[in-house]
Amino acid sequence: EAQVTQNPRYLITVTGKKLTVTCSQNMNHEYMSWYRQDPGLGLRQIYYSMNVEVTDKGDVPEGYKVSRKEKRNFPLILESPSPNQTSLYFCASRRFTDSVPMNTEAFFGQGTRLTVV
Amino acid sequence: AQTVTQSQPEMSVQEAETVTLSCTYDTSESDYYLFWYKQPPSRQMILVIRQEAYKQQNATENRFSVNFQKAAKSFSLKISDSQLGDAAMYFCAYRTYTGNQFYFGTGTSLTVIP
Image (tube, rainbow over all chains, first blue to last red; front, side, top):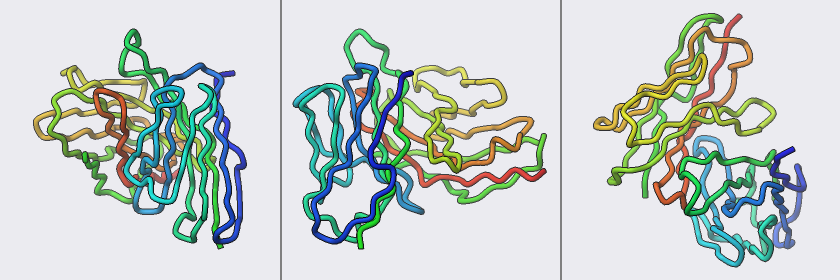
């Protein structure tokens, strides 16, 4: 089954304790991205990656890091989490090549509810 | 940066009736993609319908259709014969032609009344 898998689904942590949210896709997609969802703000893009070792900032990258060492994985790293990073996080992936139509569908993970106290 | 505006935080519709959700966006580009996503309580993001800006014909997917007005930068979603399972948060989204970035609206919470 084609899917994007995020772990964990729920996480409560304390301020300053480094954490990683993993994201893995089994569709051989080139493009992967992270979003945070906050009430009244919708989803905002944090980082995206066009392919292995290629990452770029989205609209709200402060306080986050990402890496893309393998095509299937795109972890989101919070080096020193703060309460304002309490949010619902989504990872997404889609195909992205010159030979693929640009209107390819993005597949989203199930979301990770992060609470920083 | 592009902006996407959904001016209706909440909407309700009677079962079997029709409802229209509004979305406007701001861009200087001529080619782009527009989407409506549904997010039920399970939190899963589900693609409802998409529209390529270069296509004049409005997209349709079963009971879901859009009214795409490119000059007005408007992209509304019409749900016909509303069902209880349509109750969810709906997000309008804009994607750049190059596909690098996605911009989402703030969402419209739809309630379906039996």
